[in-house]
Length: 90
Image (tube, rainbow, N blue to C red; front, side, top):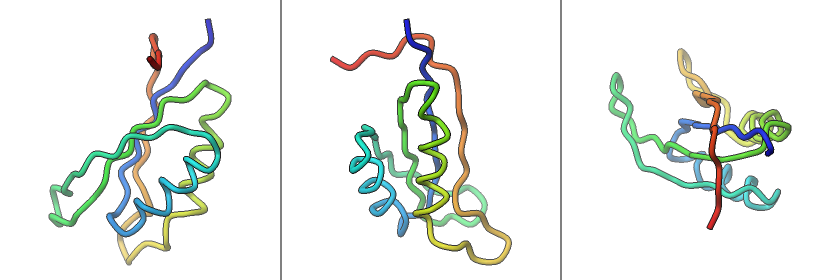
């Protein structure tokens, strides 16, 4: 059984489209969930990407390359990587 991870990436609204395009172009499936930041109440998008363990860094690199430069005191993205003991696409 392959080891899987769930990459949860919170990006700005303006970056979501280009990030999703790049992920899909590189054969990753992604789920987009609209969300709002708690502190500044700005529009965010939460992206869920299920990947095999060896592809985690590639997904992070795509986010790093594709997200536009942040405004002062902000980040390009917030990324969580969690174990996915069971990952199945049906």
